[in-house]
Image 1 (tube, rainbow, N blue to C red):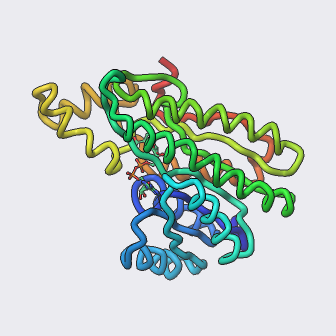
Image 2: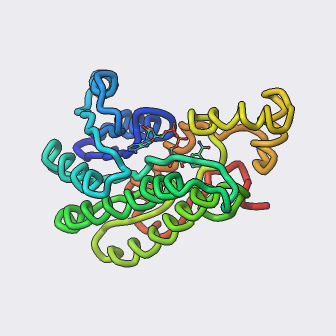
Length: 260
Ligand code: NAD
């Protein structure tokens, strides 16, 4: 259904972002992959995706910590494909610490990647989408864009900010055929979450299985991790024609977390 359209997904060489890129490619979109690593394996990943799905796919390296680089990423996507129809702001990082101990560089890094980069890509994409008279902006927020947990103040501030910005952008472009929404995943077992498990095992003196069920999934009523494919399905839906009147809202894919 996305044949001839271009999807740009930030932070898309692993985890949720990669699954989103794959889902758009499966449905015929040309895809721009992004991360900050800019390596041979990144270009190989793009080549593989193109071959598997018969679409055009390129890797565009850009560090989302850098606002100018984020804006340039959109421009590069435009010159590569001739349009930026679907923009998915997915790049994100986490750091856990009590607020009075929160390293200032980590705070700044999280706000830059998880919030500011979306400001910059959206600012760069909107004139292009307005000209085209159509566009889809999907921000990957989190259940933590709606509710909080301790020791994640920077992440939670960034994700709440991203949800707020989503609404504001939606209002600004409502008459231009452009929608802007946020997807709010619960826990998904990606490298970002995997990295938290050993710490939680040590902290709580528990084995892996108990940490997963009793600590990480304690607030996820389904008691299973959301899959990356389930997040990708929410994104392809929001990008579809049928979702044209859905804008300025959040779509929770969190196993019931925020219903509690
Ligand atoms: P991940 O660590 O697997 O992937 C993060 C991606 O971001 C990677 O592709 C990485 O290359 C990219 N990235 C990191 N720093 C970057 C930078 N400076 N510039 C460009 N790209 C950068 O994590 P994930 O779990 O797939 O997370 C993807 C998004 O989903 C994030 O925004 C995250 O906050 C959000 N999210 C994840 C979960 C979860 O449980 N995993 C839950 C809610 C929301």
